[in-house]
Length: 287
Image (spheres, rainbow, N blue to C red):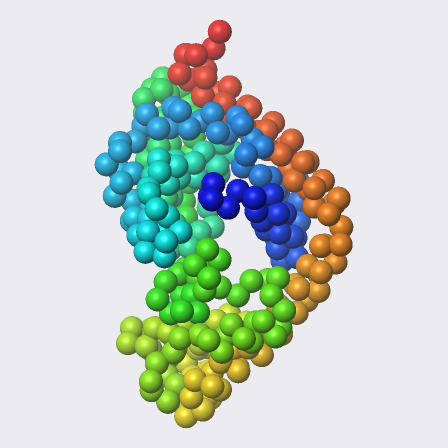
């Protein structure tokens, strides 16, 4: 987002701290890197863009939703080409390392389908008499592939201001949850169809406690929204307490965070350079 460019570096480092605090550690099979530090992956954009039509980009439902949300909340005044081509950027991130399984939320499924389309079209066009360069990646969904934000109307997202951040304190978390949207019915029941806001909060509790949302609803019963929100606050703060403690320690070591990003960038570039060489060979662009 060029309008928030002054925060890009800090936001990147904060996200890495989140990953590390949650246990996603760099290792033989784990690389953490910033997209902009892998130019070889970005070079895949040009051939990939020739494999999709403008109509396919314009009707991507996730992109359309993001554009509508940005225009409505005033964060976006015009729709730039970067927004429309974002799914192709994502395809570059997936295919440069020949990813075959991608953990995503339900809203990202159109992006994965476009990535599969790009991989298939590249292989069909440039690898007719050779081994395909790219796999066709599959999406990996969790048991909760879509989580509503605390406002109850859209997916949970930092940019939409309806999320609980790992960096939030326990008091800040409690304050955010108190503002969460429910409905006018006092008795708590789990009904994702007719009571999506209440069901969403119940599911969040379930994710923290491993108790079925139906059982949580039955236990709260006539306790109403107040009891529902206090139960979620307690469960979420309990679940995130060790993560936040680890996060606080990591924030004291900016040199380590920088080393993770720089080493990850070096390793990612090695992989991307090899893939780019294969792409050039397949397209008969080797000199």
